[in-house]
Length: 357
Ligand code: ADP
Ligand code: DP6
Ligand code: CO
Image (cartoon, rainbow, N blue to C red; front, side, top):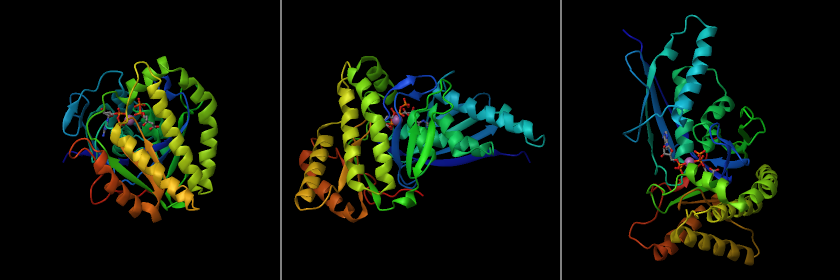
């Protein structure tokens, strides 16, 4: 019987607290600033990717959510596949008994169990799952850090999905990108009380992809320079410290401030980019009021909203507040929804994203 070379991997999404927005090298995907995110639980929002290598395949092909996507020569998909294939080729050189499957073409099928291209980091889960599936197919002895360098060249945010817990993407300084990779700041178990609530405001594909949006920001926004030089470096240090100390109010304030500033640079782009909508803003108002009331009652900030490049909210909070926040959002947001079914808590019965170890 002929051997079948096939492997399946899943990867979770990650939602940034300090946002990546802007590239200094668009081909290698090197960012203009470091960023930091939380990786959500694999079971809740994930991409599942199967890769198969077969001598009979005539070319590399990929299907996303059952629809074939073109693998453009020199494009991101081709770069990631080529990167993994060349690692396999090196590996085959180390052991003559290994089958020469680097020479075969691959067919890849991926599905997301959450909205694609809607600002919930599908490109992050997608490219992390792609490199993981190929690493498994090729039985490579690679580390998550090495894979993060290849995933980064598919979608920048994907490098952070190779690790669970609290993850930084260090921008690096080298021109070849060899030091622009993800590192784990703390594992999930370090701060298991944190939960992420995903509020799906709209599941339709965004009008401006992250890739083209950030490119336009780099070309036109005077505010971006100030952000990358004077704001983000200090925030990276401060949020890492807050995570290490499990200081939720500081973590929350930095997260909200950085979401605000990211959307401010989008607005500062020519022509301006609007990723949030009225429902997104109503959720912000609800969280602001919730925190104000908590502080007024002698307590501390209890929740943080953050928005990627889309209208969907992610709310970070501690476990003890989850029930209250779900009730609050469910109660107040129907009044802010302009259309029927325009929002919902993701996955209905399981709105709480637990985080992996
Ligand atoms: P998002 O906010 O969802 O990350 P982006 O604009 O960054 O949106 O990227 C969306 C693109 O990422 C999709 O159009 C597709 O090209 C790619 N993508 C999404 N999911 C996958 C996947 N599972 N496998 C491969 N590529 C994916
Ligand atoms: C707002 O990683 O999707 O989600 O590198 O062009 O694929 P490309 O962009 P992408 O950008 C993510 C932007 C963000 C912030 C973040 O995840 O850090
Ligand atoms: Co993306």
